[in-house]
Image (tube, rainbow, N blue to C red; front, side, top):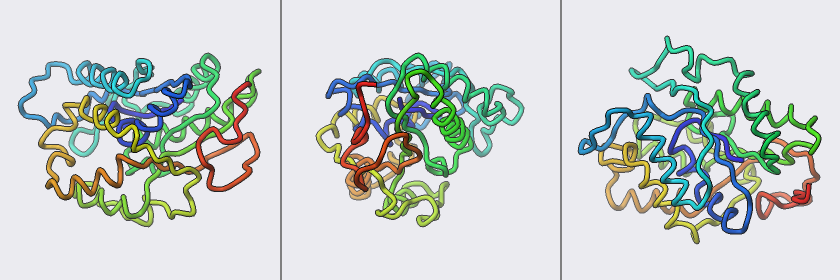
Length: 266
């Protein structure tokens, strides 16, 4: 079960991983807290009447490209960023009690019985308030579902990137200005480093499905061909994870893959 805040969060971080495990026969659940209705449209050629509805459709198309079932929405509202921040919306994720979000996740975990949870790291990737809310709720749900009859998820992983990738993200998007040593991890912190180059075409198709977010006005769209090639080498072919929690022994570190040592018969 992968848990994120907005449509397109999955495409950068875990699309290759989800494609690989789905192809291997795993049951994959993608949870999205909002429909991204406070985002901005980066393709001026698109006319969109309802951005939330449009981005929901884009996420469904991305899931098809990845090869996983349709997403599960928690039906909160996107909090937005900068001038788009929705301070007065009680259903904006930033304004919702994190225990309410955790309760929704607990119900889903009880229903779907995942072996592994994947979500944002403690910095929320690049510090987005909605990412931080989902991180907190997902961590809470991992620890509080150990009481379920099936034993709860056995592992909690965070999507992470290296300090080199953080530097590349700064080159892409001057709005972020990430401190590489704060937001990027050292190699020794990575619990799992997956080579997902075999699924690069699916990952790129999932990214392309998010047309409102990947247009010529997006950070990716503004890159020169050379910089875009550098970015894809860093972000498309590899996906990194750190370990947030476990209920099973860790026999080696780093682990060869996410299910190493996980009892999938439970």
